[in-house]
Length: 376
Image (cartoon, rainbow, N blue to C red):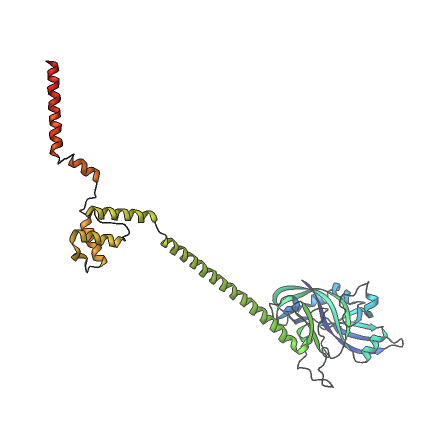
């Protein structure tokens, strides 16, 4: 991942040439470990990140060449300086020679714009180099024993900006819209004291809030970044809890649906069985006493009527329904269902009218006599 980064530049003694140019030497691009806010490096999930800048990268020829003849700007531009905007943005340039000075790069500066020269003479004496570098996320330990979580590679300088004293302090520069800045650049120490007139100093830092970049006091940056980290975690925790609550509610709803279905299934009436049971009861009651009127009577009433008919009213007078049911079962097991057709067949054809029988016999005898006379 390649990002834009700003680093403070230590400005040495300066001189004004006869032509009005300002010339000075500056130190920049320190090696070693520097701390950045994770949010500025694209990792808002991290607080402060130790980033290692190895001397092999800082002093590599490809990197050194980019610091030679580097444009100087009055404040950091919103975009990189190139051939298409150099005329509008550049107020000077660095020299040809880029030297190593301990853990720093040492470069010569020449400010050629009159307004920029005057701004420096009026006190705008801090400098900040703007460059791009590749951030590689890997854990390790620097040569001085400091652990780190990322390294800078492929450093390419773009410009050096003249920035106001007080926006960072004598040895530091606050990162702004150009890119990320080391933590120590915008945390120079104690909170700034009010300036004359009761106003706070203009030490500011650009931070991202939602989809906007805003300027806040230097001393508030760390607290804001921590708040953003805490808020992101709180939101993630709340989302997790919300998802768990929804899952629990869905589980409860599913159980209630299953319970409801079970209850509905249990409550379903088997009409065929009820009809069959009623018919069997009526048949049993009629077998006990065919004269019992079953119309409009409940099952309990029918059993009571059958027991009363068979055993007498006294047996059911004070008996409970359960007792009557027991008595009914006892008398019903031996009762045979009524069958009128079978009864008629078993009894045969009977008549109590004697005249009818005698007349039939007399007629039969008369027929026999007539038949006999014909034959004689």
